[in-house]
Amino acid sequence: MNKKLVRISQRREQLIAQAAVQRTALAHQVEPLRSTLSLVDRAVSIVHYVKQHPAIAIGATALLGTLRLNRAGKWLQRGWGAFLVARNLRNWLLKN
Image (tube, rainbow, N blue to C red; front, side):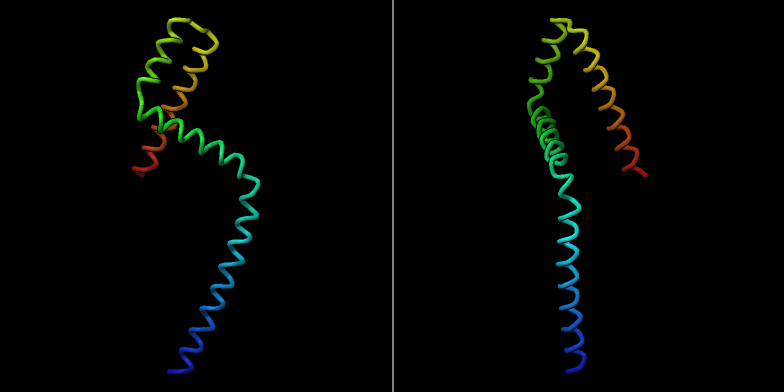
């Protein structure tokens, strides 16, 4: 029984050391993505905020519709289309 406990203890130490090495390697690999991920995080938080306050989206849409900004309208159309495609793709992937 004592040999078994020693073996388990040694294995535990090996696994802890291996996990530390993997955490360090992962941190080095993720570092170049940090700025991109922070930008994505900001975009997600903006989307959540707008979801909680839909009047902002309605007001912005009404303002752009009133001003008839062609360039902005085209970009809004493209963005809305991309949003719908991404949402449908996400729903499809979650089902499968």
